[in-house]
Amino acid sequence: MKTLTLWVLLLVMAIPAGQAQDIDIRLYEKIPMRDGIHLSANLYFPDAEANTHPVILIYTPYVNDEAVERGMYFAKNGYVFMTLDLRGRGNSEGVYRPFEKDGTDGYDAIEWISQQPWCNGKIGMMGGSYRGMVQWMTLKNKPEALKTIVPTAAVGPGIDFPKSGGIFGNYTLQWLNFTSGRSRNDKLFRNGVFWGKKEERKYKEHIPFQDWDSLALGARDPNFQTWIAHPDFDNYWQDFYPSPEDYRDFDLPILTITGYFDGDQPGAMTYYEDHMTHGRAAGTDKHYLLLGPWSHAGTRNPETELGGLQFGVDSKLDMKRLHLEWFDWTLKDGPKPAILRDRVVYYMMNRNQWQHAPTLADLSNEARMYYLSSPGSEAKQLIAPGRLSDSPTKTSDTDLLINNPLDTEEAPSYSGADFYTAPLPIEEKGRILYISDPLAEDTALVGRFEAGLYLSMDVPDTDLQLTLYAIDEVGATTYIAAEMLRMRYREGLDKPKLVTPGEVFFCSFDAPYLSALEIKKGSRFVLAIHAMNFSYMQKNYNSGKDVSTESRADAKKAEIKLHHSRKYPSYLKIPLGR
Image 1 (spheres, rainbow, N blue to C red):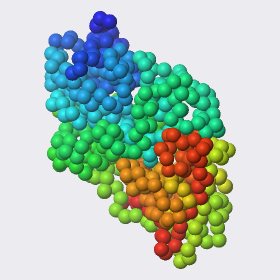
Image 2: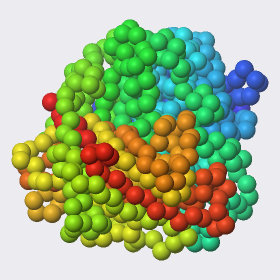
Image 3: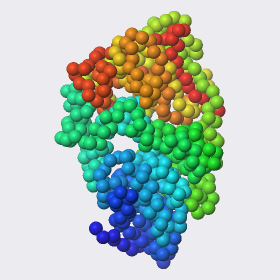
């Protein structure tokens, strides 16, 4: 298809007639890659192409047409804006293989842009989710003309997608179908009834996870099969990330954006914290972090309500405006965005205010320790829970969790819109829970909770989920954060080690989700522990084999004991704000 050049009159109501701006749009520009493949780009020019400007790039698997509004916005404000279809997507040539060529293709695109007469040599990248991840992949290749990136809700391959805690989700295939072929496939992607029926059949008929693609879509998906062939966080996943040496070389301004309820916060924070750990001051001093009370989508379009939680109007940042101010600062020598008063900017929920700190370590200066026990209780009911106490229990005790993978009667799932404030069930299958005494004063929780559990099992592997809540004096519940973990990865996602049945072992749950909220006096912390047997996740049949290949024949009923005593002081650690 020939390159199309269109002149579009952008009518902006705030601009008087006669001052409206012509935007030059060039569609389906072919960008050459080093292997002869051409990727398709749409370009938006603020004026005649003879003039030079800084360039903003979005690199997307979701087809270039998604960014028309943003292209118009940034072109109107003096930038050449470019959207680029991923290899094998939209109008780009090549075979679609998520992650695998994104870094080198991103580098080649930056090199091509830098050589165009309309580029002034300064290029920035922006975008969220997958579009945030590819910024880090491109930067890993160190293109000279890339002067800034704004990775938002950046995916962490192998860490938060397509698996979390070493556990794959059914959504993996749903997303691959959404982004397969040339079109968006969003109608099927959003058909919850279709996916729900297929999910139910897989769950109840004990169909191996490796056959999820054949069951749902009638054929093998090569990308799905590649991913599940790497259940550990091995070199396949690790090679997508910058190395410590790469991080030392990064010295450009970076703005990382994520949310407390962003499913890709673990990935976004991995890049940020690895840079802080391995980078030099020349780079880390220019890396800013913005944390808000947002979901994954909310990192692009913030709202003041989420799942029953309410936030102040100041939490609803104008993200387009923030990006414009950032690029004006980093690419045009304009003033720094006013909200970036320090390198870490975070929103304190319940206080409803933005706060600032120089580093993550400055958010919290102490932790409150609680120790698990269950005097006179099996810790199974909300009305007779286990305890979170200030010191380890003097008596030895255990609480029991059962995980039977052949049990397909799921606990009813809550479907209300206020899912983050929904009351906890009195009793729930496969759950034990522990509750603290009422807080003596308002308490700021800022950071990640940590739980250290002493466990024993009669099987070599199983999956557990931990969730932390707060319940106030009148019984209102607030979700804080959660973590799931496959027990074979208790020493690290890259260090699989099966459990020796019958032996007591220690497992640290360092929750990957950072949060910041003030919890009112009189509230109690609640720690819930679930034996995972959920239809929407890859089912662990507890045999110790490759979980994707397991089926009914491999199923082992697991008895998981949680130990608490002076010898085995299972604990919960709450980070307290300064």
